[in-house]
Length: 83
Image (tube, rainbow, N blue to C red; front, side, top):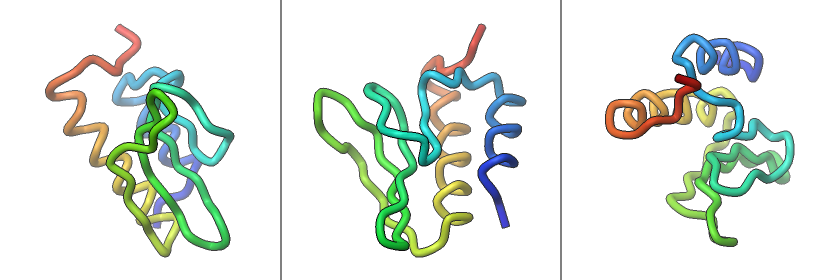
């Protein structure tokens, strides 16, 4: 079961810049966001006022696991790292 702090550590280890995600800490533009609303967990990329590629999860851990796996895939093609 993945918790918020565990995901933060894993993303740090991958070198993911904190500016490109928000873990239920308020909406970030041009970033991946995890948002809890009435017990449902949403993962989406927010740009130009639109929620893109939105996914819905019933469990917080599943949302965090999805985002982690998504960053692994994204890092293979784009640069979301601090380097």
